[in-house]
Amino acid sequence: MDYYSSQISNLIAELARLPGIGAKTAQRLAFHIINMPQEQVEKLSQSMVSARNNIHYCKVCCTLTDGEICPICASAKREHKTIMVVENARDLAAYEKTGKYEGVYHVLHGAISPMLGIGPSDIRLKELLLRLQKDVDEVIIATNSSLEGEATAMYISKLVKPTGIRVTRIASGVPVGGDLEYIDEVTLLRALDGRVEL
Ligand code: ZN
Image (tube, rainbow, N blue to C red; front, top):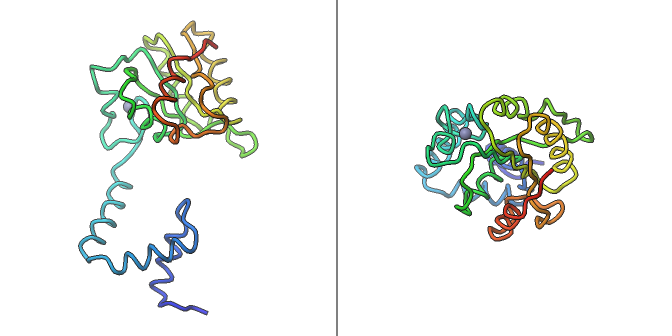
């Protein structure tokens, strides 16, 4: 039986599809939205649609951006010969928040996982290899310390080593299975400073 009007039920159902939103939270959010001022709801929905329409992958590092090239890749102040490889844009944001990393990034958008059927060609590895044909001094692998992150790190190091470019892995101060984005800045910087040669 439908307790609410079908419009409310629809809204609840759509919200419940978002990650981390259970049925109860979806209900709470739906009622909150219905009680919000009209213009605020319009602003919210417009920002969702316009973000979805205008944001795409940076042509160089594959992070999410609304320009051709992201501000980090476009910056002359960054050290473009040092590339830190991360799994997603949230990990990039975590390192950027420390304000201490001066190199550039490469965002894989995932990690290799045989269990989930995610292979090397399903993440942005080809784009990384293309970048390595240019002048690069070091590739810092900062994938998560989960099984998938470690497998990805191994795979990348095997690809990069024959090129003669230095390959390092951030130190294991990062808790096993820990998502980079939840780790505090001090731990992140310690992991970066203590990186080891692969
Ligand atoms: Zn970029």
